[in-house]
Length: 71
Image (cartoon, rainbow, N blue to C red; front, side, top):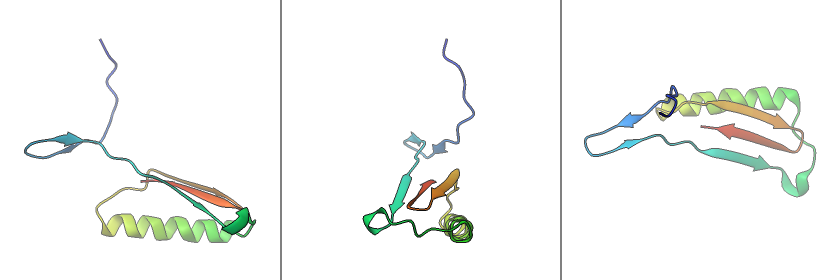
């Protein structure tokens, strides 16, 4: 028997789905331009955008030359 995971499923009349999007934003030429302040601001912006679009920001992380967002 398989293990049961706590997964958010989207149930509609004809389907059941669980969709995740992994977005990676990279600065041009991988220049180190993102500061800690900028990453915090970007995370807040992503949270607001997700709330408006009925989505959830599962994870957000970044480094000086790129960011990752799991939505």
